[in-house]
Image (cartoon, rainbow, N blue to C red; front, side, top):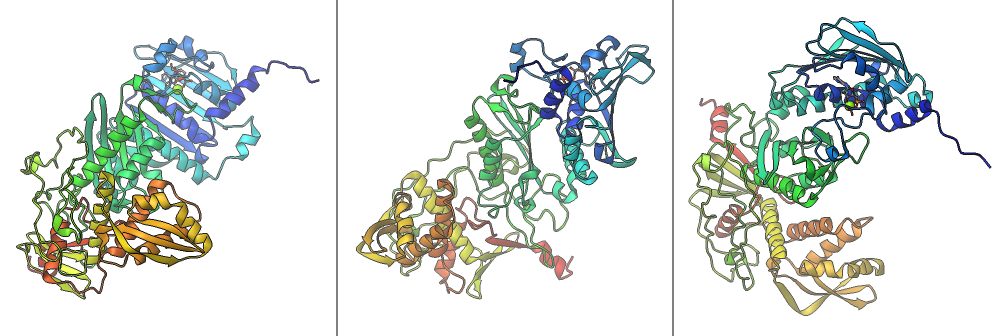
Length: 625
Ligand code: ADP
Ligand code: MG
């Protein structure tokens, strides 16, 4: 029987170090956090070979008194925490007293420090946990830490390190996070004596974003500033045009600490739903401030994960703030002739020069209020109007506030145009509506061109109608107001036995979408009712599209996602197509409905529905200016 024995402290340190120190970037993160906690105003980082050979970090913070130097390398030794109660009111980035001990255990470290108002400083080395004697040191106020040969005594760990560029990339990422979350801090990063970043004290958050991620992104940001009780959310979201293929550009900071959190990521992605293509990710730099006792940061050794006391409230704050901001922003894709389509009307940091800030008129009457549904849109007897607005968020005023633009905050929602029921044609578009005063025209039976005060709009008739139907369906389902049209004679659809089973499995979900099916046996499914709002297309065709979508998925997505996808499929099938010639009344009705849509600028798949060619752009192209 093997006997139990206590591990020597050198082994304990190495095990503990494994939790916190994974690569050079982890060292940089811990050392930068210490410098920030020390109240530094300037931090210089030098790196050689991606940080594997050398990392040097110098700050001008409060320093460490000579006698405390050995303690700095001791485990569970910290100046930032006194009692267990303090764990719930943590105001510093560090508090576990483990970083220096871990680093000192797996590298060769020199620590030099001179506290403020001390005539002289002191230095100490720690090689694989072995401390030297304290020696006097004559440097400037602050702390200087040199870490050489990381993992020199743990060769297995060292083998896991990647190439120099990869390790340097991770180091830069940690540097970036600190620079973004402390926008008055002066910081430099050098690699093999070449300068990588020089972030001046005067560069604010927007400039820092520009410095790290480029001007183009910097010029397409929208500022957020909201509060709910003691919780505050500030920062920037990128225009949907800045979308990325991964979530790396979604920065969340909680009380100054960069964190990864699924609640926050999900709230952000949900807020952008409908504005991004599937599999694309929004860009955001969000700063959440919560009372320290509303969050537990002590759940993970690297403190990058946290636990919220009320994660639903946090979700709500993030989701509604972003959603509201996106709605307030007229996300009109603008057509720049001879170049790509760019989106967005007035990015905060953008250059509002000709061709840049074209849509500066007050934004359309978008609000959080769901517009009343027009009875005229329905080919079947109408439902009572619905209009309970989603809960409004308290929104601190900022420069794009409606009120600042001359629209009173309590302005009524747009008055819907009225029409007659039933419509004269088979389209699910109302047959009659008051014509908007502006001029319009259908071209190639696919696009609508309309004059507006700013210039002209080119609308994709299918994409716009699809969006409108999608929103109507969604709203009615949410409000429990979706009317179903029963088929006098149920329509049979023949499927393979396997597909029939998959459809019947989702019977309840489909019923929630207004599609009621019954098993007829032998692979045949009977459609007994369908959503009245989609009166245009043959109901079987709509069900068939839904079935195709359902069986086309290898594994069922989550329910919410599935319903959303199916609604998009239904809306797509029922909408007018490119190639459908529309009457003047139908065009007018479509355009009138456009103004009522929550997001009339993108179809449910995220493609644009509308392009704006501005008067300025036309004048410029024709050399009139
Ligand atoms: P923690 O940051 O969790 O307290 P560390 O191991 O990172 O633990 O650091 C131990 C202690 O060393 C800190 O509590 C702090 O008092 C001191 N220290 C470390 N780095 C610095 C620095 N750059 N400036 C001033 N004091 C520092
Ligand atoms: Mg620390």
